[in-house]
Length: 115
Image (tube, rainbow, N blue to C red; front, top):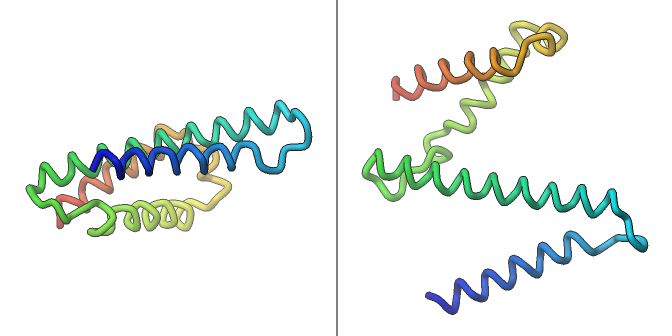
């Protein structure tokens, strides 16, 4: 198990290195900064997804069930599409992100309790 994790870690670091360094013309400070930010965002998202999946599986007492399997990510996309369809893209851009978050949060909780 430890050997597999070590191999996967080296492969991951190698792929990150390839992503960051391939295609650079000399020393491009902007490109490096942008690529490091993208890698940081991917790592943060991966950690959040892993933690939320473990919490979800613990609460459900089911090691197979994940939020993606029951369609909560698709429900989120449906809610965002319905908000844009209902209010229009121009009106939706006026709303603050906090209002969008609260509307989505309430709808997701209501729909997930209905499962």
